[in-house]
Length: 333
Image (tube, rainbow, N blue to C red):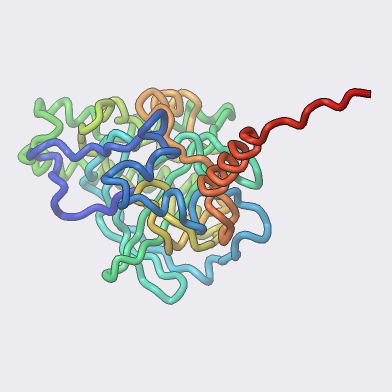
């Protein structure tokens, strides 16, 4: 998990974004992250005792209510960068804050894991969204949100509506490349009118837990094919973040101190896993899966207990030692 900075090129031009060199299978997967990047940078991946993700079961987290958390995220009427980092797809923030645990964090980006990295009381969910926040002192907080499949009859109609109100058609009519800065300026008034329409839709369907697809995620994922290749970047349509904020604050958060779920597995990360679930259409999920594939770290040990890789190594040594002991000769009777 990276935290964004100003060196990331915009959609208007510049070099392709940097693609991550770790992965999720084989020798670059989680079992061998400790050996990547020189063999010392990722040592916590194999030794840390407060690693993430974990199974969210009673006793491992503290419940925070909406009164304990202040969450504000800016709308993005002109869209924002949407990137493929090779290991995930990521949406850049245009500002926002999280106040929790006596600290104020700035919103940096949100990205996705498939399937979910955290388990919901032993159950894996279709996807998980990670919203990354950071203080000026570089303390990190992550809001985790489970994303499930909307199989209800209204799902297709909701997504179709989201597609109709987006400015994709206007973009095509302008006859410009979607990454053109000049084209973006020319289309700004149209984006504002579409933003109003999006607000109306989102206001009428904030309760995503009732089975309604998240209009925000449907809009983001409608362009997932544009970032199918690692290193590719595009610009989203206008995004209204109020759907997400209102939905999250309608529930509570399961908080614990853990780590980044990617190298270097740094600890001291404040996790807030939402009790609210977002939903997307099955067809949308399949499109996202065709781009992401698989990018979930396996669940870690209970916070405060030995790292599972260290436990496994100790078990392997013990098994090898046991195998080296000659078997006792059979006793003849």
